[in-house]
Amino acid sequence: MQFTDFGLSQPVLRAVGEEGYSEPTPIQVKAIPHVMEGRDLLGCAQTGTGKTAAFALPIIERLSKTRVPRVAKRVRVLVLSPTRELASQISESFTSYGRHSGITNTVIFGGVNQSRQVEMLARGVDVLVATPGRLLDLMHQKAVTLAHIEVFVLDEADRMLDMGFIHDVRKIAAEVPKVRQTLLFSATMPDDIRQLASKLLDNPVEVAVTPVASTAEKIDQAIYFVEKADKRSLLGWILEDSRIDRALVFTRTKHSANRVAEFLDKRGIRSAAIHGNKSQNARERALDGFKRGSLRVLVATDIAARGIDIDQLAYVINFDLPNVPEAYVHRIGRTGRAGAAGQALSFCEAEERPYLADIERLIQMNLDAVSKHPYPSSLGVPAKTDLTNRRHQAPATSGARSSGARSGGGRPQGNGGGRPQGSGGGRPQGSNAGRPAQAQRPAAQRSSQDRPQATTTHDAGHNRPRHVGTR
Image 1 (cartoon, one colour):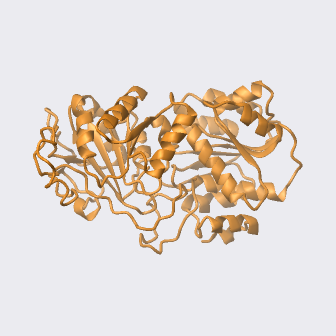
Image 2 (spheres, helix red, strand yellow; image 1 turned 120 degrees about the vertical axis):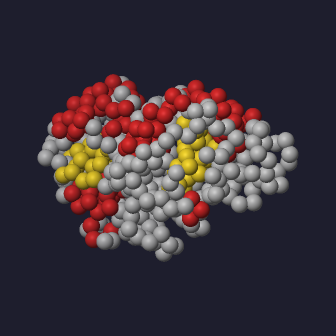
Image 3 (cartoon, rainbow, N blue to C red; image 1 turned 45 degrees about the horizontal axis):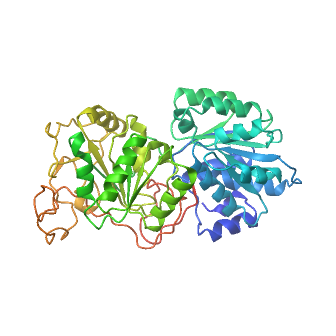
């Protein structure tokens, strides 16, 4: 199927073509026709599947066909996002896809001075992308009115639930006209989200792609059992491999993120932490530095997880295992995009072993245990029970996963034999045992957040069709 099959106008198709895409992703195939018909829609899709374009393209089409004069403080489309980073990315998508349609959009979020945002709203905009807290603030100040909203979009509704925004969402929804089109997207569908959807959506179409329990087939996943006190030393040891040019590291708390970033900086590894307590400017600087390569490591909490989308990111490291198993899938989904190979390395100390069991139960597979590294847990590697529907795992050297404990056979070759003596902090000299295998990435992949996950059926070669997605 091609984008021309949706009946999109030439200005929209031209913008899509200029972005370098030709073939829609599964969520786009399922959602775009219904959105263009004006139907309410409940979509179950993760970040990276192309869901932003699934609602942005038909919305731009609708607005371009029903133009109305811009009026101060009025908005025609409202998109709610849980995080600043995701809100910015959605706004960028509307800018890119609407560049030839004359559609205006702006983004508002907290953590920055509001004066510029108020100024933009005073002019009136077609599309407003917002985080709930800042939007409520500006509504109370009478800086914006939602009385003329035609389309209401809630993106990553489950994340809004996790972050405690659902009460704010209900307040905002109460100010939106009852006669409207509503689109709700969520990576998971817990009862609370279904209850919210039942109140906000009118006879919705339901579409779903990529169940939350799945992980991309080309992500090589491994687990390191380690003492809590040795986690930072283990991370530093892994990052001594210069072939790991960039790594996204996840911690469970803001304090831990700061401490890990400080530790790595002292080791000469340029790093920055990104979490909810950081100012918007600091977060944007860190993310930009990571994208450009001036920062080698970005340390993030789960709050920032879905707002981070880096092209050709080969390594994700779970310094702390998440206590919610679905968060593991979201975290490692930052790598292994669009058929590219990636590696997800996780550390597990004694108190986190129940979290690991929950994760393995969710994804229906046992993670490979790395048996040889300098900081093994005193409890050793736990016995594993085969899980139902467990995926076949090939040897790590092939770029796929292997079952059972690793001995280091999948590590990069020739990287460590010439290291100076005394630099290893107690590890075996001249050995890379336990270090991750080098992720092989296609040489010429476009920088984009819009790629689907590796669930597409297209060949992974260089002639693979390109996709539009969640910039």
